[in-house]
Image (cartoon, rainbow, N blue to C red; front, side, top):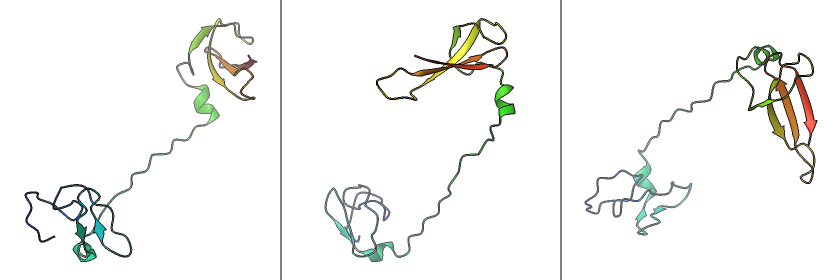
Amino acid sequence: MSTESPLSTSTAFCARCGSILPLLQEFGSVKCYTCKAHYEADNYSNLKFQYTIHFNTISVITNENILHTDGPEGPVVERKCAKCGYDRMSYATLQLRSADEGQTVFYTCIKCKYKETENS
């Protein structure tokens, strides 16, 4: 990479065209995909990378947590609960059977959290 270039670059970018260079493989040199410039592996000998992996936090969902949620579990429709008689239930649908049959609808009472299903 001793060629004069108008670009300020590191070994991750091509000194000729500024494109991102591919990763250095175990053997051989690096070739720019755009301008076909070659860079020897020696150019990468002092290069060090530092990175941090951030994982998602795990939240524990228990039956107790689900029963004490304040809002509905999905869209709300006018449907009478078989347990408490309340006239509004939330619902969710899943395709449990083969594709040529209807979806299964799961209803949840907003008031008492009673659950029931209906096959369409």
